[in-house]
Length: 212
Image (cartoon, helix red, strand yellow):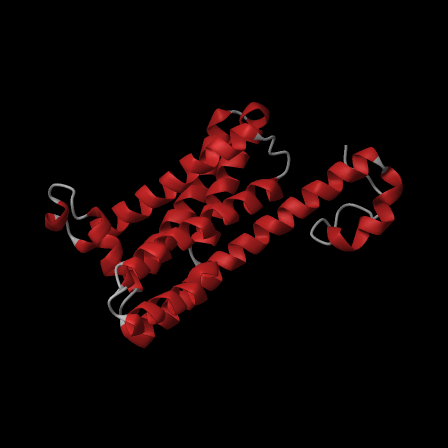
């Protein structure tokens, strides 16, 4: 139902209906993820994005804003049917944290990696890292739409896909937290012992050590 509404937003394009379903799904995922990222770049240019967690938080906020706007469009199309309106809004509100918020956060993290590391590791490595993040976000988006509208099984698969996205998001948040702690320790090495519990992912570094 929701996937069908999304297709109608693009049906004005010439030849859209002649495309196979999987190509339409890929096109929707690419268009929406790139559109959200382009809008987010305006925010990135307006303020300094110092840490990975900054990009993740801004990306998640932009994604949730996009999801809210989409929900408003779907609700507007169902004003004549209150039951259908409430069902769609309830379902989208329930699933939104698994979807656009996560995908845009991953895309934003990819941009941050590219922008931050291109000068340090070379353009090729930075571009590859950004491409992997983008592929992950677009792939999750594509799979989400592919199983949408297929009943209870589709809803269960969406929860599984959403859980995979949240797992990736959790890893990004953990990496960002560790980077912030290292930056703080460079400024104040005396905080190294307090930061020990947060650095279990780096067993090779002693709690009192400071990475230079």
